[in-house]
Image 1: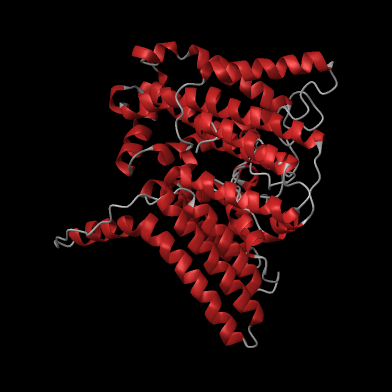
Image 2: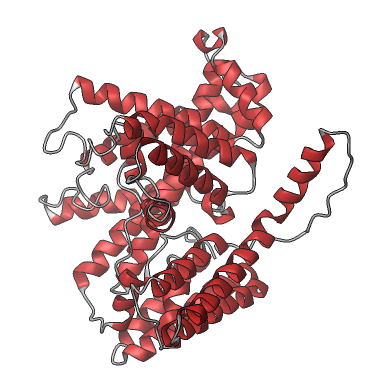
Length: 483
């Protein structure tokens, strides 16, 4: 079930009504409703993989209790590694087995050996990377004595499978989400209104920005050999806004939906394209994943305490692993490597914490220096996204070489339906202006026209909703469903 589908538009109000007007007097009934609704939501994609989600949930619930009840370290370590091994094993089989099998065959062919890799014809379970990481953080926190195991199976199951975040995050922590699940929740009209507002903005990002940019990004990338460097650069920029509108749009819908039920999820995006360096970009892009790798990989590896060499090593490790987390393709690994490379100057010279505040805070416009920093960081990001979007390394390299050729300075060779892209450019510019105006808020339209007359404010929301409806029709999947 997609957030941008008619089925979800029917599903959400029904669950919302039952939650607040039928089960509101019982926290247990509310949580059971959320669990059943979440399992139905997931089963709408493919009911067969619902059992994998349930197994993962039972595994971590049981091993968590066994770790908490262990009287010696060896027993605790056994249950910990059992959970870690099985979770990563499932993730490896479903997501990475074919990649390793084919890469091994390619590697030995260099030495003259031939092998036909045995590949699995399996569908990647949607959201497996996300709910696996929920479980991993939970068992790691128990093993490290940061939290105690949750004994209430329903509450723990809701933590893992809460439908707004189930298939594409944000990646939650037990320390943040479980207490909210266990706490009595009262209906709050202002939270519901705010949730609907954020959902509206998320749908605008996905349907009006991401899906429209995708049409032209796909057109250019699919026929990349027919286009000049200038056109390929335009295609990369289209994809840059596509992936932002797609993923941050999903996150906005997820956060807004959770707020309808009185639950606050972790913020996942904070206006990353206004960053002044790559370090700031990664503090603002996919925040829940970045902080997950920081807390569960970077810091355990030694973090920044071991000197310059250790900082460099650990940074490359987390970025390459982050790239691999996104998918079983060398393009993602190169994408991670490039981001590690881009962030190196700030790591080496210790400037990675320079830009902690939002740019031009309290001002309408950035300084010339800030504008140049934003532009340079944005171009680095666009360059890295080329590898993320390309189907393989050779395609990415061909595109990059053409962009850095003399054809970059030619008039874009726009043809066919690409000539109608002007409306997308205009909409994207308006979108960037709105995002800039609301950059000091949690999401762009949180406080938009908040001091204006209610009629004006509601008219703007109505207009946004109308634009969303006008561009609705096709319902392409969210990009991060494949991860």
